[in-house]
Image (cartoon, rainbow, N blue to C red; front, top):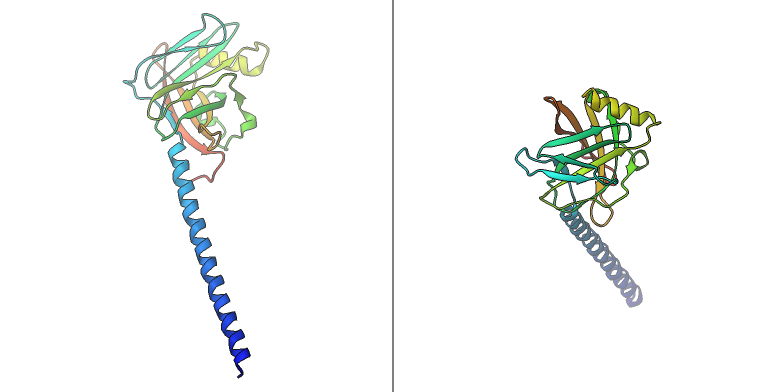
Length: 211
């Protein structure tokens, strides 16, 4: 074998080794970047659950003057008349990031009859104001029916007046507009005018479901 051939083979071998090392380095860097991204997202991720029973009472305001509901820790509130049906729930953000509420949907009747499929953003009623729940702190969600001619209004008013189970899906995300999540809450009648708040399911809209 002449020196030219030997030199060419040596150069090719060196180039192949360098390419392999570069590929491994890029792959390792991508893996490290992915791990760092997951860690950052985890630090921004909110998760809403019912607040504790000993958490403080909150005063929740609605659009019209004089429209208020008071919600104690671990509870919800509801009020129905001919003009509006109002709902609110006391929640605690047990996640690491601020929760920004996006929208809601309500089902009446037995909570065991509500659809179990993951909701989509298009199925929810969007909030007309920004509602934030700080990480590790207490906040609220609210919902309102105002069109007295709609089926939703009639069903919601009946559920409040006859004290039926009320299921509320609340969608929220992080402060950057991502990691959208839906927590399914239930308002359960307790006593003559009290409502206990529970949570039964959590869906991830923008990432894989852990189940």
